[in-house]
Length: 97
Image (cartoon, rainbow, N blue to C red):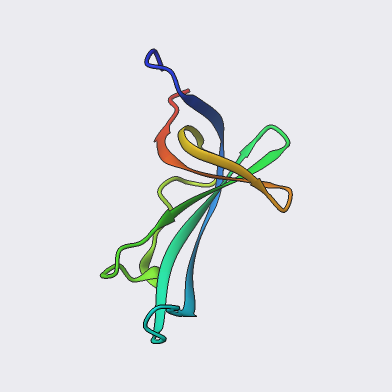
């Protein structure tokens, strides 16, 4: 934290994996990408932390990194408000109590 940046402390809730199918505008071929969304509550605000999965990773095998209710520290890289939720990218670490 001494280097600066944005940090959030919250309670981990759930992890959801999602695959998006789309048509590539350049080639016209069908394409897809998978992402995982971690939900963290910070006070009365819900934060969706999104991470893109690699092409070789199976979204159905994504496991929750923390138990529900675990306090976590989120080092935020990007953050924006979308449809009432905060959407962020960053890295997690557990908070020792």
